[in-house]
Image 1 (cartoon, rainbow, N blue to C red):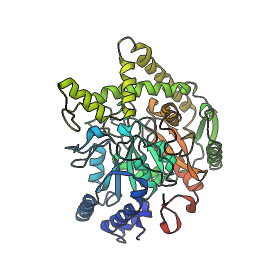
Image 2: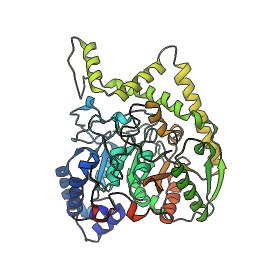
Image 3: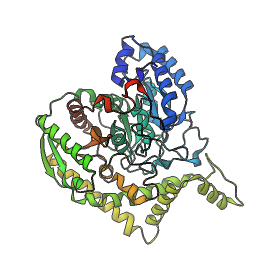
Image 4: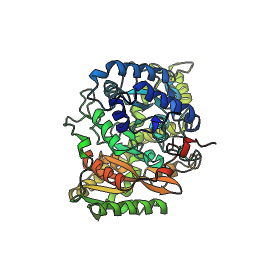
Length: 495
């Protein structure tokens, strides 16, 4: 089998430009890889190699005008909560069965203009509500490092696809850690940009004040390349911020000398796996060796962040998901009257986790409870944001674990919502504050990947990329221990 799927985005771009490989040949390698791996990972909800072949042909036709784009001809995957014109978009839910959007999300449109070859739409927790990719109505995605473990969530399909070599890069969404946590558990690079840096137009809303489109790649350089294309102001999105987009690739390779990194005390007081703690602490020592100055800081209100998040996010979900009523699109169940049709449609269309969060959110917004719950949560959110502002006045960035554990077993937490929610304890605060966060692989524990999280100032993704790239070069994972993508001979795991 051709092993072109092993190439990073940057390597593939160089090979395409040098004429060493054509878009069609590169795609063929990914199609063959997906035939081998998809039966193991279940990374995709909709996989469409015929459409991808048409994309590759179109890129070949447009090649003379695509000289500006390093992404031209490189196969990608998109999380199934971003609208793709004429391609099924389900959000992992039965209530959107058969929904074919009439338009592309802005990020999809920008990637298409840059010559994306779209392989399909990746699996996800239903409406992005989950931390393990087990609440999808279609399949349970498996971690390509160990098929008995979860890939993380909610963007587990995108993370698994990139880790397994089924796509060169992928997009996900991050509401409370749904890019960074699965990136950590699958051993890839995951970026949640600053809220407002990347357009949310065409991203199906879960919690509008928290959602942000993010990236999955195999390297920090690839992350910079993808972000370069999708970042920037979009007049279609009222939350998009009109700020210039810097040259992210120029941030790579910079010296860490003079950079100051804060270690949030509270992030190391949660129940961390010993192996996670060890790998993260070693990675921080490596950053010191590379010239960064490290010091302790405090984010005192972070202990309230998780409970704050699980009031604000369900409240916004309760409002956003009210539109799924069986009238305009998706599933429609029968009923004796309009109200019973609504009830039957939502009962049959939504899964248990979505129903749980809708009920929590509706309760928090209800008369007599709004001030006690939702309004108070918003006040605590302000305190969490202020903690970050004070810490980032002293430090250029903060570093900590991405996830308190490595990938846990499939089915292990599915009946224990509180334990499942705790998976996001280290990622949720950055969403509440709207800050950029980057997860970079920093080692292995129990033979599974560990991620280091780097949190920065608003719109300072450059510093995160600088730090992540330096760590990646200094502390690469053992090439023979990086899961099925790098297994000698490419032999897949067998269930």
